Length: 438
Image 1: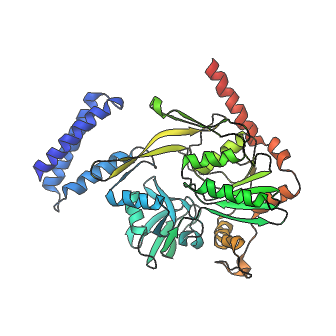
Image 2 (image 1 turned 90 degrees about the vertical axis):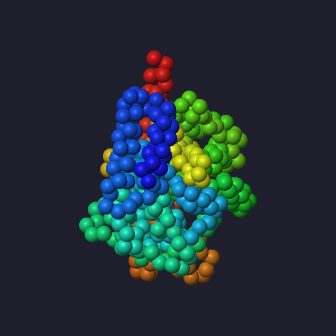
């Protein structure tokens, strides 16, 4: 056992030594790696129970990755396969996007229409137990593996929520999660209400088809609902922006530590829907690609952004397959909007993050839970649509109602023009350009 560990860690240390030249002085790096070898050997020889070399090695790798940021992740073989399956469009589980933050399994966003969404689990909720297993300190792979399972099976999540004294318990029944990213309805007055729940390879194409269909039916305005959209493919986000922008223009820049990570993304030009009144709805569950779309549109003064501050995930991850079938998801760059402002969230959990809406409408936690439960009603084709909440508990969606009110009064373009948030972004861009010239 000792020989195996020493061989493994010697190879690991040598590889890390050469890779670490960019991070710390070689002597310091070598000393720390040697210390890790010593610790692993002590554990192997003296721990009260016999240890497994592979488990120790995986634990060491996870420990290294966790020191980086909440979005970098080491994926074991099963987790890597699950991620690829999910990208293809379906899996069985409860429908949560999660990350590890401050050692907690933290909800980024529940996917609309899923068991977690209908039950009222919210962005920033911290999952403290999965069934009877304590999840504090757990990796995202472990948490995902426990929450997924056969459709029809049950799982209990214990959740800690800000400003709620007692933990909440959610008894969920797993379902086949089919990721249908676009839902829409043409409301009275020719207002297209479109909810985009995720940016996958088909999202932009599906959205474009809906807009073309509605334009033939006298569409007069568009409301794009990106609330609780956790993001997805960057190219899909740029394609969505391109539909609403006439000129070919810079929509996003990514910058990393390495020069090759600096990339510029431009709209395609000739956007077919560049003149239509356009409103985007956001909340704290809107992340990543959702923030690219809403932030770029705000910078361009092309859309009115209504709702609450977005999540603040402004970083780029790449998945690097490893030789043994595992993979490393690594943060390699950050997003910068056309104005030059970053999206990334502050370390202060109470600070405003991401995109600041032009019109901020605060929704209480209680109302947000009810809105989640009843949200599917707007898309129901039944004569008597049903909701997960009783009739007497139904509430009005203030954010959507505000958007419809502004559209019906013909004030969208005026309010975009006068938007303080867009003005602030433009000023920030001016300051950055001035510094660069100096």
